[in-house]
Every structure is written in structure tokens, then in C-alpha cells.
Length: 271
Length: 278
Image (cartoon, rainbow over all chains, first blue to last red; front, side, top):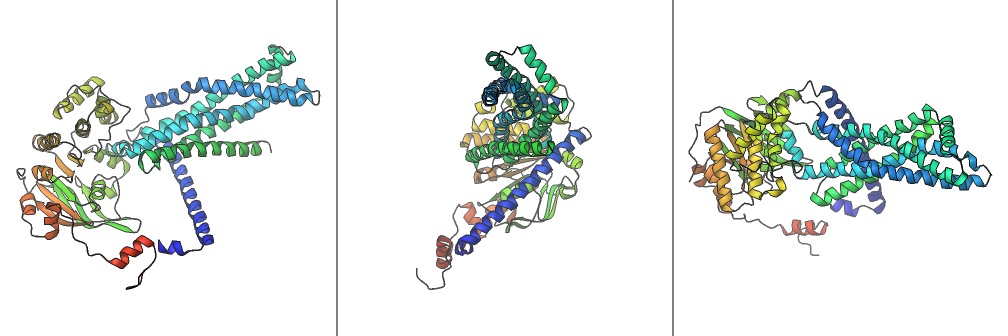
């Protein structure tokens, strides 16, 4: 302790960066191990007489997916209208407001639907996952699973992991429809384009590639939310305060990871 | 009153040889050797930081040592594969200090969990088995309550019911009577004695409570600074001449020779040379 206090500020700064980098790499490694371990239990669970319970997966799907429908639909609808307003306002400058449908279709399906869905699920379910696992860890419930011969990854993580991988793309598809529909309503009211014409134009503009681009991203978002929630929940120390800390950390990290991944995905996919 | 002594020639169900554990640079356990015989209650005692909780986690195979061997029911836990370890765990039961009941499940569901995960029994049979175990711990009729609706003593008893649902060969209890009033603590002690006598379980208990330890133990292990200070029957412990053991039994803190320079260094973070004044 005395030694670190006598170091100069530059050394202390460098030491802090070094420690942060090592712990970041360590955390990334933990994420990788968790994904592999989850896949292992999914495949090898039945052979080890520890199959992943479908009931638990459905419970998680209900919690993560079905119960999120109202908020996801509301946000997707709002984003759709917002895009329509902004698109018409911008294109008016060039007198090209009738082309707004193209911008809305691409923006909703390729970017905004997966992004807003990912962010909502991260805030809603990623935090809940971290808090649940953190609380279970400090109350020794995870240890209890271990000693009962129930692997915690198989019992707690895999159902949440599977549910996120299935439900985030499903919710994204819902966001696509709701976002496009609400934008269509606004465009119809503002520009007088009929819904049938709006739908025709949208279908003409969009390809299957655009849809798979958005849905593909959302699968990755689901994996990120699961892994970040679990790693943070499992790293909790220090009681209830620690649970609050890891929950916040899980949300911030998941949203940051989603936004950065979205940017990288867009960059790679448009090359 | 000491518990009736058990057969000292019984086969060991737990064997620990030269167990060494480090947490980072700190050595927690410094070469521990011990065994627990079939059908006996072994109580592990020691002051704070003596390593008893770490030893218990190793015995429960929740942590692995830096070196040394732990054999549970004749199997070296360090050499077991995943499947063998899962099979071994089905023959162990653990009642944690805080109960560690799953807060999202009822008491009955908590107790049935090992059955539903490890057996193909139908739900009715599992419910009947859970009710039998709840009767053993005097909690009959509480299966539909949530853990949050139970008192501290009830939670500990429910945890014991969950720990014995698979009829384990070894039961581990971490501070079973801590924080309980004397009557409830005594009832829990009686429950452990019943489990030993009626089911022939080997029981390992970590506790601070001297009265409880002397009531239930066949043998007591005293840990001090990561080493075994004493291991043997309760009467032998009571009459032991060692000052450290007598201090532990009489709950006296040992006198510590205060190194003034080291103490000041710890407080200030500055190395103080002998005789120098601040």
C-alpha cells in the first residue's frame, strides 16, 4: 500500500489503465466461456441427464418477449411517426417529400426497429437478469444449485439465453410492422398518400436482404444482452448495493455494446 | 451433555489430506488433515478468519484447493469428471447459513427441486416426499408458503428439509443455530441428532455456538489460522491444556503484543523506522 502511495501520478494513471485493460480482457474471456458453456449444456445436457427445461424457456420467453410487446410497439410506433415527420421536413427542401417512403422503409427495417428493440430489451430484461443472478449469488442460491448437482448455467442462463435469441428478433419483426404502419398513417395524413399505395411502395423498395440485415443484427443483440447480464450478475460483490451497481452496469454496457455493434454491422454490410 | 459417542472404527466418508488453499497471495488453509466417519457429527469451530468457512466450501466441493486431496465417499473430488461429480452431489446435502431458499418458489417447490431435477418421479410422489421431510423438520403444512413468509428458524429448518430430500449420505450445515433464540437453536440441534440417529447420516456442522457444538458433536475440529489446533471427542477438548483452546472455550481474546511501528505504518501507509517519531 505504501508503495502505491509513493508512486507518481503518471505511474498510478498507467497502472489504472493497465488494470482496467486486463480486467476488460478477462471479462471478454468470461463472456466467451459463457457462450460456449451455454451451447455445451444445450447440446450435452440430455446426455448428462440435465436437459434444458422447455418450461423454463417458455417462462423466460413470456417475461422477455410477450410482456415487452406493449412498450416495444409503443416505441416503434413513435419512432415511425418521428421518422415520417423528420423525413418529410427534410425532403421538402428538395421538393422530394413523396420519396419519404424509401427513407422510412430502409431506416425502420435496417436500423431503428432492431436498435430500439434491443435497447428496450436491454433496459427491461438485461437489467432484470443481472439483478436476479446477483441477488441469487449473494443469498447463496447459486451455491445451493451447485451443491444440489444442478448446473447454474444450464438451469438459469441457458433458458434466458435461448429466450433472448428468439424473442429479440421476434420483437424486432413486430417493431418493423408497427413502425412502418404508424409512419404510413402519418404520411397518409400529411401527404395524402393512401395506405395501399404506401404499402406497395414499401414492399417494392424493401428486399429480403434488408429484413435479414435487421433481424440478423437483433440475434446478435440478444446474445449481447444475455451475456452481459449474466456476466455482471455473476460478478456481484457487496450485498444489495453491489446488486444495484451491477444492474446499472449491465444496462449501460448492453446498450453501448448494441449501439457499437449496430454501427459495425452497418459498416460491414454496406461495403 | 455430550452426544453419545459413535463407533470410532467406522469407515470415513470424508478424508482430507494436506489441504492447502491460497486466495491470491494469502494462504488460508495451511495443510489440513482430517476425516469424518460414517454416522458421526463433526463440528468445525474456530475464530473469525481461522479458515473454517473455506474448509467447509472445500468439503462441499464448491472450491478446489491449491494442493492436497479431498475424498468424499471414497472419491477424490479433484479427479472426478462432470458426470461423476453430478452423481456424487446427489449424495450430499447442504443447509446454508441463510437457508438459500429460492425466493421465487414456494417452500414445497424448493424442497422438491432436487427431486424434479434428478428423478423421474411423478408430481404427486414428489409432493408426498416433500411433506414427509417437512414433517421431519416440524414444518408440516407450510409447503405453500413463500420463503419470505417464514421466520429465521423456519427458513433454516426448510433448508434442512431440502438438504435431506434425496436422503444424502453426508449433510453439511453452516451455522445452523446462528441468530436464533435458544429454544429454536436447541430444537435444530435435536433435529440434527435425530437425523444422525434415525437416518445414519454423517453431518458436518460449522458453528460458533459452544453450547450447540458440545450438545451435538461426536468429535470437534478446532481451526486456528488455517491449521488444525485440535481434533477429537468433546470431553478431550474440554480438558485440553492448550491456552489457545481454553481461550476459545472461555471466549477470551488472546493478548496481542502490539508492535507500535507496524501499527503506525498500517495507519499512515508510511514506513516508520524503529524509534522514529512522527
